[in-house]
Length: 381
Image 1: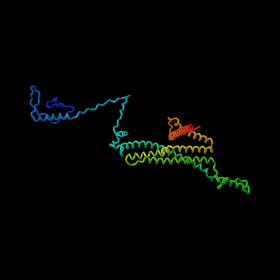
Image 2 (image 1 turned 45 degrees about the horizontal axis):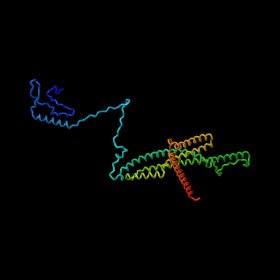
Image 3 (image 1 turned 90 degrees about the vertical axis):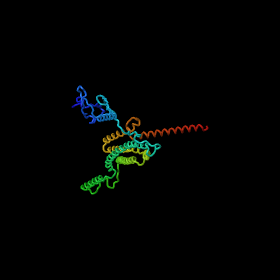
Image 4 (image 1 turned 120 degrees about the vertical axis):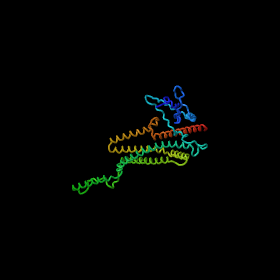
């Protein structure tokens, strides 16, 4: 391939990195001229003034285009730092609106409309209370779901025992039939031996007209188990009702953001006033009482069958409830103890109420004593 250095017929142009490529007219060969150099070097002379004018115009346009083209600076690549042979992780910066920056999320209010129906403060309040309510209600729903499952299983177990023990509270016609059949056999034997009367034959103590006599043990066991079953079913019913209350509390209201905020605050204040959190917190306590009654009846029932088995069952029930009361009462004396439940929380409140009431009573009592003493000093004699 020929170049301008090897072939003098090809014009040489100085090209820079920012200079645009010349057109075809600029790189075309000029017409050959005469050799002016006596040493034999060839040179070209322009034979046409129009061609000189065109070349001058092209050069001027090229200079203008070079001046208007912006200079591009290639970005320099920073060396990544390595620590222990691993590439250091750079913090990832996500561009966008911060979900907690409400000044960016919501538009600024117009002047003198900062508390209007569509003000930013109401929208911010809606965002915040929706997060607070969702966390609060999620805890309640989880507790109620677990309680409903446990109440259903427990009620099924108690119903099985109640179905067996309830038979002792009514006349056992199978036992009556067995006693009457035994009496008939005695009569037939007496007739075979030539007896002419039923003298000396024991009469059956049971008959369809015999009044029912229930033992105190059967009465006590059935009372415990029926009460346990009633408490379990009541707990399940209240759990279903509270789930409906929660659903109604979270129901979306219509209107402007200000109206929705007022509706939410109205619901929340009445939720506290009507002690809905207290009711939800006391439902597990009802379930625990039902479980305790069932264990008590189980120990009494098994005792009539086998004393050693009753001792084992009683020991297990005693250990379970000692652990239950211990874990609920221990945080009252050791605040750092993590064994906290709803019962512990309301026990704190109850103890605080009792302390404040006792303090007020003692204060008023001392005040009354001081008033009576000062009054006695004022009396003559």
